[in-house]
Length: 360
Image 1 (spheres, rainbow, N blue to C red):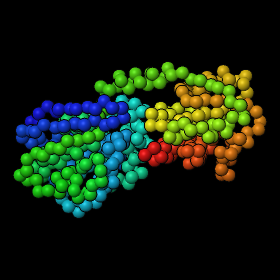
Image 2 (cartoon, rainbow, N blue to C red):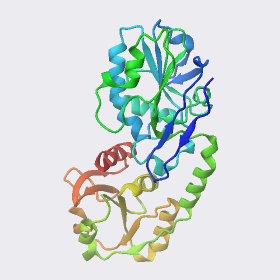
Image 3 (cartoon, rainbow, N blue to C red):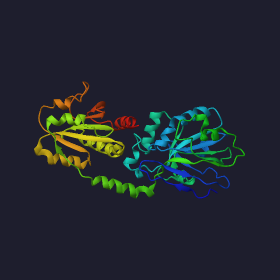
Image 4 (tube, rainbow, N blue to C red):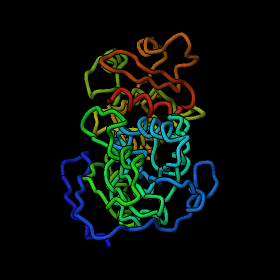
């Protein structure tokens, strides 16, 4: 039986948690499971019936330490493809228990559909199974953190439990603990454990804290200021944040509602990492109450301006020749250089992917 885990949690914001594991007596066996994969098929123990070792890696899309090992896992799968050894990955998080700012190192969350997005983007060559709602396999193996790896021998007795490899520097795949355990002759080996470092798994027990945070978002003050046309250059050049996202809109834009909600969500996810959001609505001052209500409905607690007039040439300097209309339009800037532009409906995934790449 496995002894009680000793857990040491660092309280520094945005840093993952360290988990250390005590020595064990005996070797646990692989629990029975039946989980849905991103190909929509269900997988259980009998579907992984090679005669060698079987590895299980618990990964979280939003976990930046998990992301460090994605390419290594693809390489490991290639190395063991034609052997009797095999492994699969499991996503263990209840996605609704993950607060927006906990996704600030990722372009996607941990829902089943977002697992598919990450798998396609990275070209995963291994099975990726979802255990976020019931967390039966996750709890059966006492998994509290991602990434975390297990290896079971041909008798499906646990011979390895711990990290994939070192998280704090470059390491060859062949030197990683998980790869060595997966490819070893583990017939008569005792259980080996290593410390792990990563993000705490989210479950229904975390829903209260997440819901409280989301409620606080809804109570944030929404401000709307009048911007004089002559001050538009200030918006383009002001040095706020590591990245600056400017959204230009009117109340009559067809995609206005969806765009405002997308940008509001993106702001909540990445603002602690240095994303500043500025919205500029083009309208008349007498409509300021209506504009503010739109901002309140989308919880746009960013820097919000209203600009009136018909000559918008100062704003048009932000647009490339490929942009068809001034509104709706968003531009992502770094050090006053335009990095990304999009008119009409915002592609939220594309924009998040660009933000993550620039905040690294």
